[in-house]
Amino acid sequence: MGAEMARPREFDEDTVLDAAVLCFWRNGYEATSVKDLVAQTGITAASLYNAFGDKHSIYQRALDHYVEGSIADRIQRCERLLPLEGIEAFFDEIVRRSLNDQDHKGCMLVNAALDVAPEDQGFRKVLAGVLRQIEAFFLGRIEAGQRDGTINRALPAPNLARNLLGVLMGIRVLSRVRPESALLEGVVGPALALLRCGISAPRT
Image (cartoon, rainbow, N blue to C red; front, side):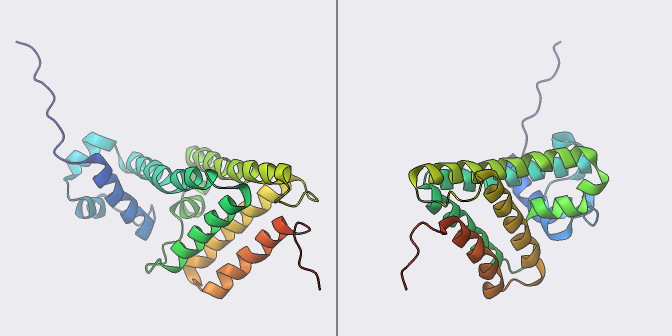
């Protein structure tokens, strides 16, 4: 008699990962227990382990799910816009999400960099890769804008891209403790103004 056919999963993987993301995002890695994940996802601990592995593996899958559904999706949408418009739209969305975050969760990626990466070399490599992906998005948009004359050519594109990455990280950290419109927009505004500097400055 042949081996029994594998039983189909009785849950939607994306829905479970959405719930796991929210649990880790709110509580952080260390403070989140398997019991918390069971309560948040609505499936048993055995089902979680069978589908995703141990807590570390669940966190990795949840983080990947977050990156794909949030960061990668935002980059793809903003890459369809004109260079400067794409960068502005990227930061407009970040500021809006930060201000509307009633739980002050910040960014799961940044939280992982602060909470988990210092102790876990594997996570450091994963997070560094995502940050390079974001930096590459900024760099590509800046280079395109410098070519078409809509972004300042006075500074090297790699330096401007690194500056924007730093601004992004700063906004996401600040939003956890001071989610104030004037503060966040005050951080973003000068960085975007630097991109436009010398392009179409109004005459006085």
